[in-house]
Image (cartoon, rainbow, N blue to C red; front, side, top):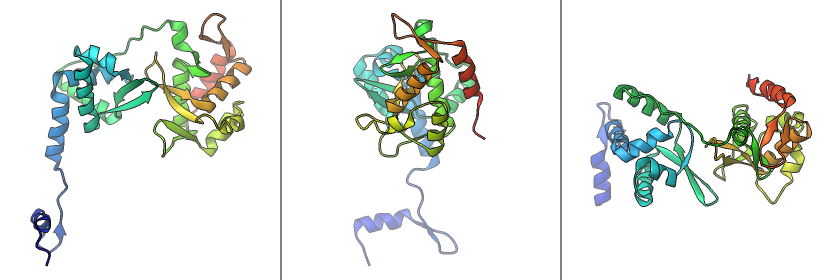
Length: 258
């Protein structure tokens, strides 16, 4: 019989039911897990950060430090606690790290708590010039309001699926290849672009939500320019949505997966 301290601890943690079935309780009880989550939210600076992120837009640690009115090092410590608790996620892009709520369930929990507290849900008010916010180039792919909407639409339709081996990257589904091909996107050229990722989430600095980057994002923008959906401005990165583009994008985005 194994009488080691480890074995004794295991046996002590087990419980037998009347019919002799041995059960092992979960590592963390529901009340303890709830207390841990509540403690992570209860600190005033962390609560302020979470409320700020409820609008669905990501922000950098520097911006969240300003929101919390604390030093950058203090904000980093608070963000590390929220990350460890699974309340926020972090997307690294270049030298910046963008933080957002970990998912809809976190936002719903916060909103329910705000109802109890008698407070309204925070809103997002961008300061980006309207022309740049609507549509612009981000290197060689579409950014701004329309870029974010196309990114979200492609995910909802199942055209792109998260890549299991690379956070923030996407793989193209068969349905996606067919749908984008019908939209005039040179999918084959994007797939053959070996020196860059096929598709990835690129954080939009005006919308603070991802638009589509990578070779596929570049091919999609090129298709919209070729077909006259967008007109480039002469003196900026802004792109003007044409009447044809307005009609076609409206039709496209009204299409939902059956």
